[in-house]
Amino acid sequence: MDFDIVIPTLNGARWLGQLLDAYRSFGVEPLYAVDDRSDDGALELLRARGARIALIHQDGFHVENVFAQMSRFVDRDWILRLDDDEFPSRGLLEWAEKTVAAPDIASWWLPRVTLFQHKGRLKYSRIKTHYHWYPHSRLLDPQCRLYRHRSVGYITDIHSCGFASGDPYFAPASAFFLHLDVLLRNPGERLAKMRRYESIKPRSTWKYTYHILPDLFPAVQNPAPFKVRDFDALIASLPEPPRPSEMPPESELKTGQVAASRYLRAWHLRHGRFFRRSLNRAAVRVLSRKPIAEFLCTSAGFLRHQTWVPRRLPSQLHDFGNELFWQASLRAGDKAAVREAPRPPAEAS
Image (cartoon, rainbow, N blue to C red; front, side):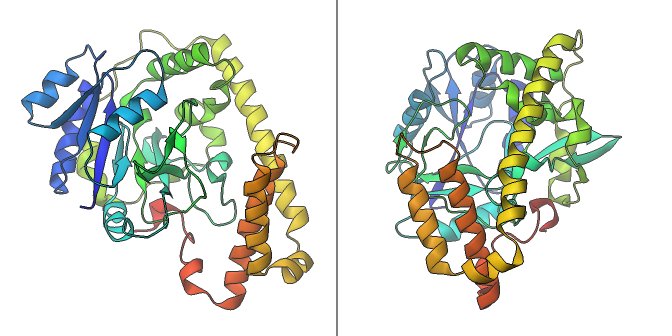
């Protein structure tokens, strides 16, 4: 491969062995960036299994520190960064192998599929806020994870990809990876992680309650059966999360639900009404031209760095430009552009 898979991990010993076996079944040997605060035997397990290891020192939550340190251990130009509770599809690995040679591109956004059990069946989340970038194209929960690690500037924002990603380039829907957090950790463990992030940066994490605790709020997930059979052996091998000693406090769940509901309403205001009112047939017929779309996206990039511009305007302009470009491609019969994101990842195989 012309890229290296790097996996930062802290106390993931319960499932690291199973995921390592799955990687090796794909013919892949990832590099584990092990946080030196791990105290559950993760480092010893990986050493016993002969895994590639880079020991990372972290003092508190510093994304820049972790990702910049990871970069020093990688000789290849590209890193595919996956968390220790994530796993790539074959489609992602095959697509990445063909794509990393693309010139003048520093990073790619990849679709992510969050799995959880609902009514005794394995489902994936289709909550509206997962479609932040392309609400009409069905590209699911894109994350910036494939990047030229020597060409990016690292940042320290919580819930960011860890670096300034520049102009967004999106992988096709079939190049997705799984998010297994809900299958591996019980609600109490996930809530503890939310508390930790909130203690570092208040009001940064409660709004993601519906994302992090989808099994406790299934009504808003719009769940769909996960039908891709390539992962059956891996999912069957995963350990059951420990039974929680007690359910998360109702007061905290209520706090998270209120914050998440406000976030969801803001998303509807930003995407739903904006696109329904702006992208009527007349507007599309008049404005869906690629030069107009490119102008809007370029303008959005410029305005994003201006302090006097309303915070949401650059994102709205960028989304509008993307939609116009999509519509222009449809009208022009641009098959390469139309193929980019026609289906949800879980239905792409």
